[in-house]
Every structure is written in structure tokens, then in C-alpha cells.
Length: 144
Image (tube, rainbow, N blue to C red; front, side, top):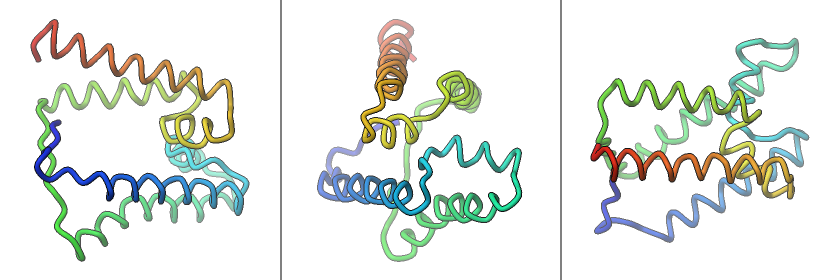
């Protein structure tokens, strides 16, 4: 994936980050839950009574919000410099990592760090470091 630096808009990126932070804070304050995507989706795979509606609404919001945004604004097309095999492998590795790390980037990196969780700090350092190392090895050592 690459960034189109000619159309990079740091103010919209900042606004998006602020909205994510506000949404995560409101979710925690109003529902007493962490807005971690892997946990929300995982709860749909083994649903508990009375626990499905908010999870479905959460996922529909994740999918629906970009669709609604696309109606009112021009959404840039991403360019992904990888084949389907690499994308499937990457998705499986991320899924495996969220299971072993007991959470994902949204749960640990956004919600956990904002709660000053030492476990989330360790998890965030680990997955960011693994990401940096993977990109370095793939791009600079293997030339992918």
C-alpha cells in the first residue's frame, strides 16, 4: 500500500483520530466495554443471550460508516502492492496474533493505552515492532 502524498490531508487524519478516541471513550463510559474489534467480532462467533444486538450494531457501523461517507465525499481508491496469497497469509497471521495477544490494535493500542494498561503497552510494542520488522524484511531484504 502506498500513500498519495499529493493528496495527504493531516487535518482529516487528525479529525479521524479524534473521532475514534471519542467513540472509544464514549463506548467505555456508556457500556463499560472496550471497543476492541476482535473482541466484538469474537463475541458474535459464540454469542451470549442479550449480547448480540450491540455487537451487530457495532459491526454494521464499522461497515456502514464508510459507505455513508462515500455518498457525500470522494473516497480514494487504495493501491495494495501485494497478491491475494500474501493478503490471506497476512490476515491469518493478524488473526493468530490477536488470539495470542488477547486483543487487537484497537483494543490494546487505542483503548488499553488510554487506560494506562501495562499489558496493552507490552502488546502494542510487540505488534508495532513485529510490523516494523516484517516490512523491513519483506521490502529491504526480500525486495517484495
